[in-house]
Image (cartoon, rainbow, N blue to C red; front, side, top):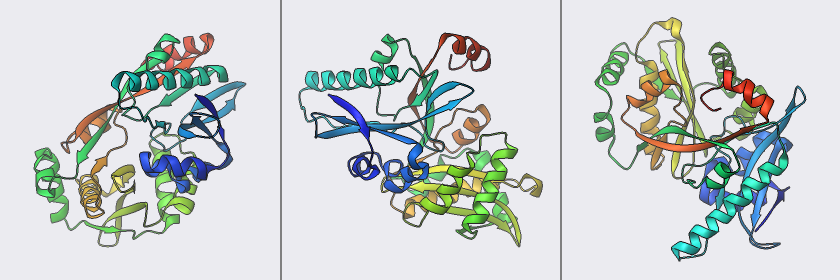
Length: 320
């Protein structure tokens, strides 16, 4: 197996997008410009059979390997032609071992990467002293009817949704401009104390977003703006990427209603799954859990140089 950089997004995307969907599309990857590092997995010098991506940055004299912001995982995919289970296992193990060696040879001060949920063999990383940590997202099967899906909602969710509707909260699609959406979510992220990554966020709305890959739903009461959600999608999965409400409005159920309408929109688009795109914050997890989704694990790998690891044990004990 040969691992080497790919300098052309199109080459990676043409192979990866049919497997991974929207987060491997040319438009999404272009959000990050030349900061994104694409790596191809080649069976020989020319046969591309897989790949992955990451960002490599420097700060305070340290080198960091991490995910591109707003992207759920490192986009790892690989295609095995073997039908023999033993051969397939060996093939997968060889690839994961080569990927582990690739990241180790980067000699970064800190590596934190998430992998797609279908990737479960992390023994090479464990053997190389990485911390392998389970994380979780929630997913709803959209092949069920909307009545069945809503029937699995927590009764508190259903009650506040009905209350919001009775208070004449109306949800409309794409009723804000890209500039308005960008400014709203930038402000919401700052208020929540989250990292904004302003340039990437701006690129998502102004360069990536169109009717073929994303939608925004906006809640209003009369002329008063109450909140919005922004989802990205491909032919299989709709991802809840951003969502926030205007808390000063004092109306319950706005966020709940926006999510219900997002699920309905995803069904209308023909998606098979609605993915809440990460559910690790305790309060957020409880809220998402109330929509009756399936809990799905995925894994992160974490490794730091010893002095940095000691520091992170105090700051980020949950991953170190």
